[in-house]
Image: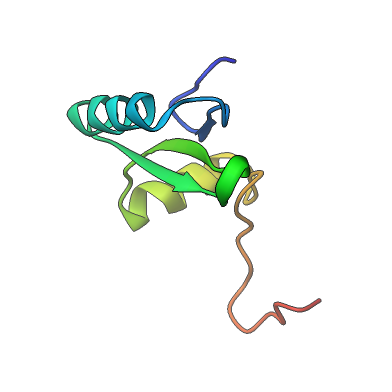
Length: 81
């Protein structure tokens, strides 16, 4: 899997606890965020860049206002629509 500087990297749930700790440590050294998601056998790691709100907004705007993870809505637009 390729990792662009704009997308999250989801890792297999097959890493051991020790391997996950190493990945968390390396991510921290590289100034990336690393979170564990899911529960039990379905637990996996997600690595992504740390961004300010302005950086995130600029990225979403450069993608036409929507990414796989975010969608910009005009103020007052109904979120349930």
